[in-house]
Amino acid sequence: MSTLNVQSSCGDENEQGTLSVTQALNNMLNAVQEKSGVEQVHLTDAVDRILAQAITSPVNVPSHRNSAVDGYAVMQADLPTNDDIRTFKIAGRVVAGHPYKGELKQGECIQIMTGAQMPELADTVIMQEHVEVDADSIRIDARHSAGQNVRQAGEDIQMGQTVLQPGIKLTPPQIGLCASLGISEISVKTPLTAAVFSTGDEVLSIGDAPREGCIYDSNRYSMISALKKLGCKVLDMGIIADDPDKLRQAFKLAASNADVIFTSGGVSVGEADYTKQVLSQAGAINFWKVAMKPGRPVAFGKINNTTFFGLPGNPVAVMVTFYQFALPCLQKMMGLNQPLINPIIKAQCTTPIRKIPGRTEFQRGILSQSDSGKWQVSTTGKQGSGILRSMSNANAFIILEHERASVKKGEWVSVQTFSGLF
Image (tube, rainbow, N blue to C red; front, top):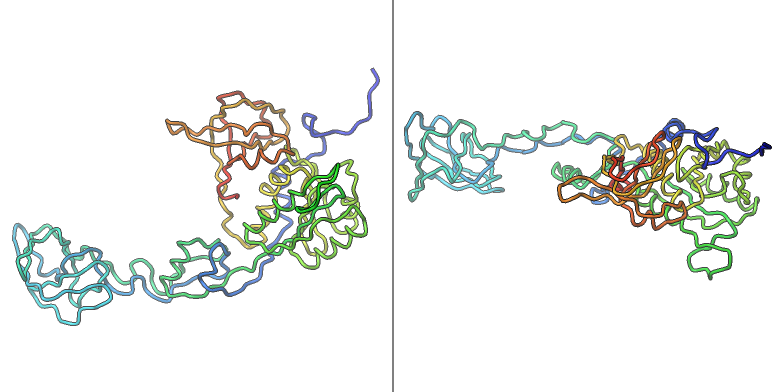
């Protein structure tokens, strides 16, 4: 039988010359470094920014001893013992923000509200439900212990204590924590600048009149949205025609003004445009075949000092490779020491999935819980890498590991939720 001299492809089992997903990601992570500078921002503008310097408390929290409940402040030496009942005269009342100015005497108590500063000499609070009130006095029994229901100064946070470490993405509770310390401005990492453009004479911008044989550009908008959600500044360079000189100028301009460049398409075998040719001349770019579906062709490297990601051309492949490769790299470049958590859980697959071993697949799925609380997942239907609706209808990736074969209905699969990604 005669044979043909053909190249390996993504349809082959254990395609030769490919990197695993883990190898490709590790190569990228090892090649990128933190690039962000530092700037001061007001606390109200700091949410979702990355903290640049540790936050230490300038005060004690609480700043003073205060009551944890509504009740009556007494001296522990006055507490009854054994089966005694003791009567206390109510000498005054204190509420939060208005400290008691008098001097507590033996056999007296002060009515006190939650959060109010403890009167001098008082060190114990009797909850109001545990007293018997009679006009201007109260009676208590021996159930109480010294120091109960009192928050000590610095009990939560002590002056000089580090409360937030640099490299975290600031959340609303952390913003509130800074405010509770009286801090109005904090140091955060400056955002990365990302240049994004699409290539190809067949690609139309939104607003262009339809033309035969052409398609509207969705990849650029997906990437821009993902980058903005991550907090990057975006330089939208539009669509660059299939012209070597224009492409060369676009890469030069992008590398001069951005920390990272994103393009889609033009990086696989047999591409009809000039992107791969120009990239090979522009910088130190690697063109990889990754054992994954979708997203097999990926370009990665540097143009001058700017990191470059050349993602595949199909819309779903763009989003899969962005979240599996670009997102972890961008987090490192941004100075994020605690990467966002993208939970991977086990779920029972309610639909069969065809798969050949030798590559990792990222099927788009719909994750839900059964009435019994069991996690279950189904695919969104057709999984072609050009079917963008398979992403828009999904809420998770079904991750089918490198050596896994086809999945039968009812088998358990790994699922990466979109929470923390999108």
